[in-house]
Image (cartoon, rainbow, N blue to C red):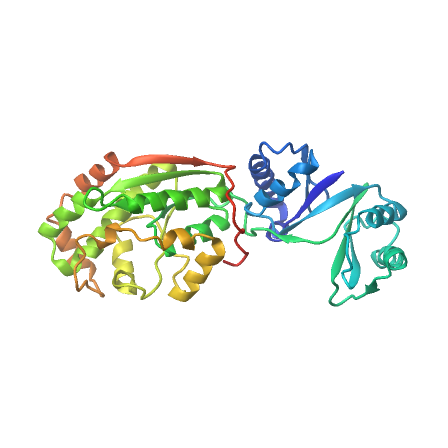
Length: 398
């Protein structure tokens, strides 16, 4: 019987809370694998087994599993009876075609009640393979690693591991509102928080009809891509072009960018209250642009009561770009567009804003009216998965 054996790392450290994390992961797995005829999701000791209903679905099961947070790695495996001879017979029958030049057998005996110890199982099965195929044994750098896992009442064998997305299962970290600009940084920041178990609601601010719809189209593409990880997403498209225009009439030019951003944070905080989110997420990095100095970020964040999470805060542009390329959002992010940040932007924005001068500039503005207007005119779009697209999966550590 063909199965996919999933392993986790961080969940194993959760002690008495581990079953709660496992339940979230299993629920997410079942939804991610919808429509593939998966027979069962089981929990043998220390790992999770996905029982695949038909061989033709294995490739698609593997593809979707690469986007499930909480999985460290996984293997396409065969379940056999708990008998050394039966394990050896199955491995000899299913050995890959070709000559890997060298091999090793690695046994993990999770069930210590099984009387044959791991080194003895490795020796017996390895001897049978060497005799049948003539391959040499290499314990340090083998061309092929054959894995055997012993759990209560049964055993599995497989021929290698594939990396998973890592992190914590979706839904275990609470909900956040992620500001999605359409650029390189914000999707990476959102993904990093999602990988820690957070469910993200995406908010995109645009300046249509003053600018084109290009940034909205990019935000939709990025939201659809990120939905592969959390399976269901909400994108709120918020127009602020007219609000920006009115700000230019009342606020000194050097302060406008900070006032714009504080307005965005206020709108995002109102949305957060509606969806039950506990924080905002941005792609800010120290010193990357004028609005991202420590002083300006402090003044911007002071506009709202929620914490503002900045997962990229200590990264430089090259590091963020490399992360976006690994993740797979980079090709969309670099498509030319007209971002709302380019509209009515002063030539020399303040780099060390003071809270008192920003609050003084805002006193002449109908802040509450602007916030309500932006939310009232916004549009909510929803995205659902499974909707896997072609392309390589992101590599862990993005």
